[in-house]
Length: 141
Image 1 (cartoon, rainbow, N blue to C red):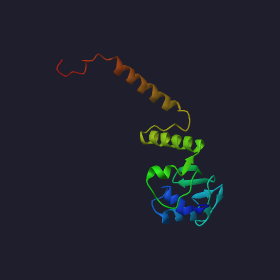
Image 2: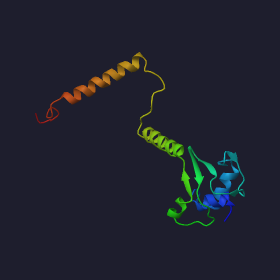
Image 3: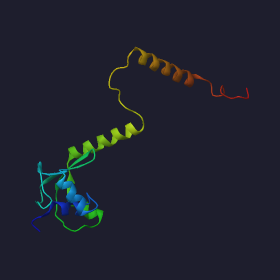
Image 4: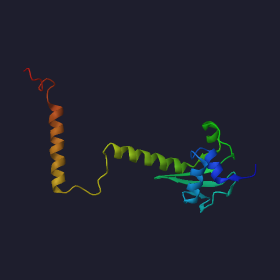
């Protein structure tokens, strides 16, 4: 096989659930082939680089093998190799989103005087809580 349609390959490699979703993504500019916007019928060859944007996730992959039939996930993973930069960016985004869900957001600027006082009070309360004896909260005493 010398080439396969890019929308068909994306479907076979399990990046999209249906071929029509893959076609829509390519038409919508979410998929770039070798840094260029492409059309769904473009012939894909081994060794080419594809950039796929899904939401805030940007993946860059290198085509290792061609297939126009959808198979099991293990076979689909053998069709491509994700670049190191893409893996690192994906992991960074994942950890950032996990921190945001937990409520840990990096401040935009240094705290002002009021914010510093609040942090000091919180630190003092935490220190007092750790210094209390274990049975001091027991209501039977």
